[in-house]
Image (tube, rainbow, N blue to C red; front, top):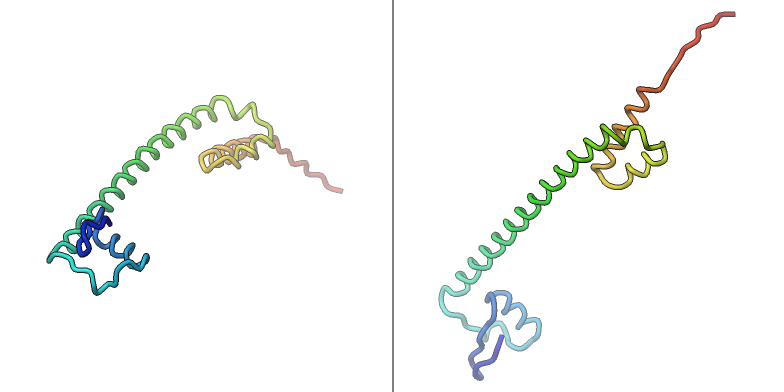
Length: 127
């Protein structure tokens, strides 16, 4: 808030934020502040609209990032099918699983494929 005269302040931003700031700094008593009729409600509506728009932009940005991760998942799926199954030892598969959720899923598939491809033989003998 900028002091224009002894009795008049010009506020930067939303009214409720400025009130809170002025009260915390003990510049003015709450009962000494007067606001034009309807301006507090208008300020609150504008602030709410700005917050909703900000939230919408954040969700859109997160959605764009999710699309990038889906592309990453698809690429890693192709790499896993054509390369990773044969070239990684058990320790490398373990460390791959520690990287992130997508890599963990791929490491589990590799481990499952290796487990099912192990040669198992059963020898029945009787005494």
